[in-house]
Amino acid sequence: MSLLFSPLSIKNVTFRNRIVVSPMCQYSSEEGFASDWHLVHLGSRAVGGAGLIILEASAISPEGRISADDLGIWSNDHIPMLSRITGFLHEHGAIAGIQLAHAGRKASTLSPWKGGKQVTEANGGWKTLGPSAIPFYQGDDAPFALTDDGIEKVKADFKAAAQRALAAGFKVIEIHAAHGYLLHQFLSPLSNKRTDQYGGSFENRTRLLLEVIAEVQKEWPEENPLFVRLSATDWAEGGWTAEESIILAGILKTLGVDLIDCSSGGLAAHQQIPLFPGYQVEFAEAIKQQTGIRTSAVGLITEAAQAEEILKEQKADLVFFARQSLRDPYFPLHAATELGEDVRWPAQYDRAAKPRIK
Image: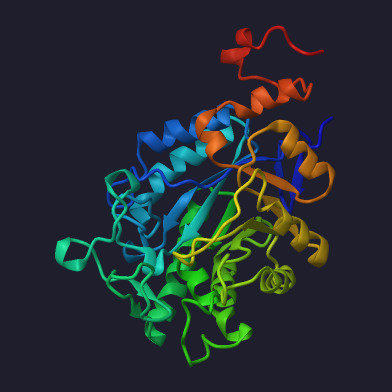
């Protein structure tokens, strides 16, 4: 059996293969509610054979949304539709996960196809929050630097979101500490200029993330997998580094985090990212080899053979597919054929699976 189609067990959850649909914002919610779009979009990836499907960045509070069109999990009213989605995903063999997120200073923007620009309070947006009063783009309104009370609210909101995720039937939580959103903003010296216990040293800059994890673990069962997405580097001078990510990953392992989802960038508008197929795999490999924690690889991974090689060389334990999952909801079924694996197609589609590989 190929490694890509070998099962992986983490705690009490077994993924049928190593293919993960990466969390990708759909900007198709009203007041945070999931819709039929999410059911069909995510459900088709479960029917298509993915092992794990992680719902998009789901805001833990209204002010934590990237845009007004973001998915949310700040209200118990969000649970029924999320439960319908998780039920469908599990019925069709995929594991349902959710990414808990707070956008911080990158909140209150238009959806990408509406222009993606910041929406000010005067134009119907909301005041953004961050570790320091430093905007993402020059000319944007600066965020409000979180007070101690504000930080406590963020932690409480993550905790409450974890409880709702459990109630909605999710089996995996991923805490979003990447891509320039709030928790990443605290990690990076470029966005965090605080002089209190949450700023300055590595220990202080990582403090909020560690406290958020502790709060989530109060609600999230110990036997359920807990992932953290990190931007392994800011790709900008003076920012968060790959070396710091390795140190942090080692700490997270001791705290019971099960996997680091290794992405990069998103914190600095002036970042310089050297794009090429699998450009972030080196971070997954370094973190895995130097700390022993499981990792996932993500970023311009589009082919089954490419993913198989990553796993064969022990550079990661899971492979996240983002845009490729948008292009091809049935990528896992097609990848199985390419790798010579005879996987079970949905009964409704079995007539299209012939001739089957024996």
